[in-house]
Image (cartoon, rainbow, N blue to C red; front, side, top):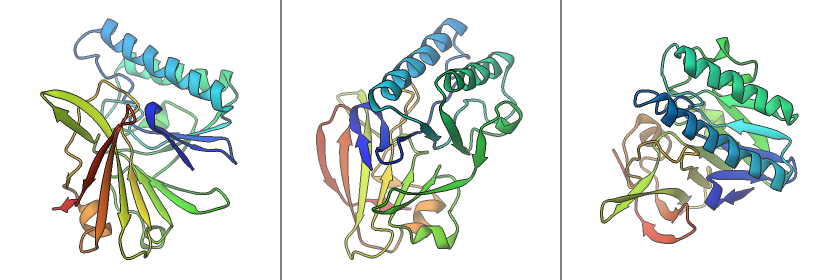
Length: 230
């Protein structure tokens, strides 16, 4: 398992599998269709480069493929169909780990859709989930948990930068680590990674001794922190 820091993605080399999250296809439509088209094309262009560079065969999207929580607009539905066609043309098998924005998505794409996905790369096992729902207890004891949902970011002089959040358990018990991925869509809003405000964090991580590290999507190590679970 290799985090592709600058690409907001995780690469599993042995299985040629790529994990990304937070596409939010359709983001920008409330401003203008031109803006939304530009964002959509940027996502596909960057994804295409990663697929070619790393010879990707399988894609996992860790939630929020689409922007609108309920039924997508006609234009957003077209984006979903174009995304599916994009992957089919490249012979990429895809799995969607359903996020809170992915309501009714099964009516618009033919990918495998699940709420939790497990993967073993021969060295460790991973539980992949979006982050808005608590995984079953048996999955919480996997070696590593990979999630998204909070769009972790920091602000320096008013400028937003998305970050990776790497959490490691200090007592060595399972899960050994949690990785909170930055969004693949570079234009969505961001959240504070130091204060993790959700039942997911309180049930899985709360009450345990964790140490956190922040790395910007530009590859800059931003330091260590002690997460505050609310």
